[in-house]
Image (cartoon, rainbow, N blue to C red; front, top):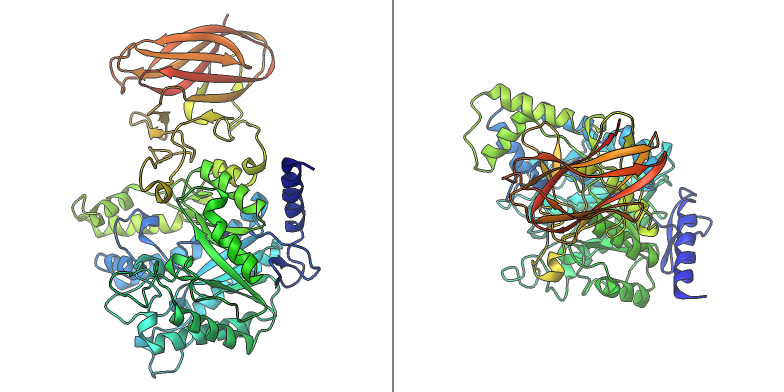
Length: 588
């Protein structure tokens, strides 16, 4: 059996086992996560980032903006009642049963819940009696609802303590840390509250098989040995306080719950495991997080080596925030090594996630003020309406669904075909295909782009971009807003040798005029057109439109198209131009 056949067989076996999820409690078995039948389970999940724990970048805020700071900013502009209303509407809309139903339909089998401790218990400062724990109903009610939605879809839920009491790191946005107060690592009261919270959660969910695991502490980034020069714990050699706390949490969980997997994360945003091993529990999984580096075996070799050395399963707890090219390559890498994954996040204001929260004019003005780019909004009512609209539109029914992202995560890793992004029906009337509606598929299959993703960690910050326009789709193709038309786009920053492909559905055999709507500053650009891999026009000079802002329709050639499906490919040979539309007109 050759290497390709072995890899295909391996991937198919993982896909089969994954379909057998929710067969009782999951557990660690050697280097695998298995169900009660002993079948290998490959978790394909996504994190609900931004729901319980808002991170400023998800809301288009620049710089350090942990949730408590965002709330303070809102409270400076609105009444306490209006501020609370925003957060209530946000929590009620951001994640609903419809989200989980959709995740199941798309192919996900698990969900990671990033929890904020302050929805479950009071902070140490707010406790009426020092050392006692006051429990709140909101967080548990939200978790119960989420669990019921997962159970209805036969999916697993992973509980992740994302924002621990006091905050677990110096990347303050992640854990909503207030640096004017004692951190998790500087306060025994915060540690005790963290331990007590996990005991409370374990008591509540100990008999729930759809809870896959407890992810004890998200992305610790703290220099225990050198708090000044190693603030994020990347060079930490011992990690004793982290190991001690994880062991204490495990012990208290096991006092009430013997069944559920315990997931541990290292220091340095979850990846520094020096001093953490060996394991101390026989039902444990270790997690790592992976962002902005190459998707080759070398990038995960240390993880594979750790799994082998300690005979413990590994799970990728967070990854994402990149291009579709990166996503497909990453999933292929993980699953070929039997590593389950959880993407990050499901939704935010932005394109590189399955769902996009739509912004609005009043909120944009508010963000510009907060980012120091505009004056304070003159009307409180505008701030209020902008925030409430944003919270309401966080609901999936108002979200933009990025099918290209979903396709990159589930089909493209193991399928090299291109498929139509839209139906692109060519009728007897003038048929316009938007340039940005090129086919779905891998780079080099559905399109060709030379700058396909963000690899800045591997490249030292050089040559990292992907879609420079940051709009509409998440491939390397650079897409920009057409300022002259509402919700219209064009492809720009086209490099020599790049190309775009379109699957079209012709309803009537005929001759068609093929036109392109383009903008060109001069007459130095050349293109070629292929139909079904046959040359239809070779090295056509694109006429100048005198400006890259001035789009004009130009006749390229006449093509004969029979009824049925065809593939049109536009090759950009050389020159600087922008491309808005492909137009096919039936000749009379």
